[in-house]
Image 1: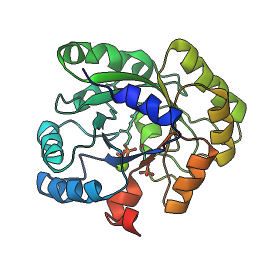
Image 2 (image 1 turned 180 degrees about the horizontal axis):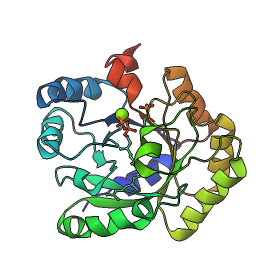
Image 3 (image 1 turned 90 degrees about the horizontal axis):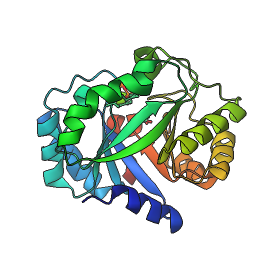
Image 4 (image 1 turned 30 degrees about the vertical axis):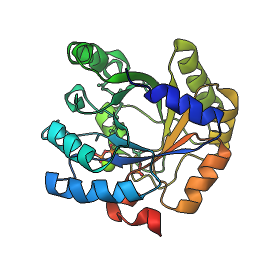
Length: 238
Ligand SMILES: CC(C)=CCC/C(C)=C/CC/C(C)=C/CC/C(C)=C/COP(=O)(O)OP(=O)(O)O
Ligand SMILES: O=P(O)(O)OC[C@@H](O)CO
Ligand SMILES: [Mg+2]
């Protein structure tokens, strides 16, 4: 029995902020994974997310088991596709792309994941995933063929997140897209965080330690760092 979600809730209750490092399996070899795992172990990260928009699942089990030899941090699958599910992880963010209107990303991939998930020990965490315009076309947008919510449409972001909560999602993830020019605005984070009960994840385009703090202060419970750590594995010690 996993307790990933209850630990996230507990952290929120205690105002303890969480930090996930995103590992893109397409960019990391098995050899590199050992070094990366050691770096993550020394970093302030509390979670490891594994996933990529275009990854096809090759060497995923091995990659995760190698990472797990280096660190005890919980590993959560952050899937772009059902092929990215691995039983070596601890849990999965069962994303539904609520900002878009593509049925594949609202329900189809989920149906196609049932056989593997029903047999797995993964803790499944229903997550409302909202793509917010980050100033350039992102991989998620391209792959999912959906339009992001405009940065200035705070009302729509809020209503989409709240509808997700009413639907029973356990987390809301505001995503500006990997390598976004602009992260989700602090104003949008503040408004959404103040008006939902469930924990809020924010990621995409966050490049500085200072920004992580600002995003926390605006109300994010968990921040995701991908590109900044991919480009510099000493990012957190700067
Ligand atoms: C439910 C299952 C198993 C699959 C569908 C899950 C859904 C709805 C995904 C939403 C759309 C999507 C393609 C999300 C990708 C999330 C992700 C892993 C992002 C990180 O990858 P990037 O870093 O953006 O990709 P690149 O490195 O390829 O640019
Ligand atoms: O790569 P970055 O820009 O840090 O984005 C992380 C994550 O939110 C992408 O899905
Ligand atoms: Mg990436």
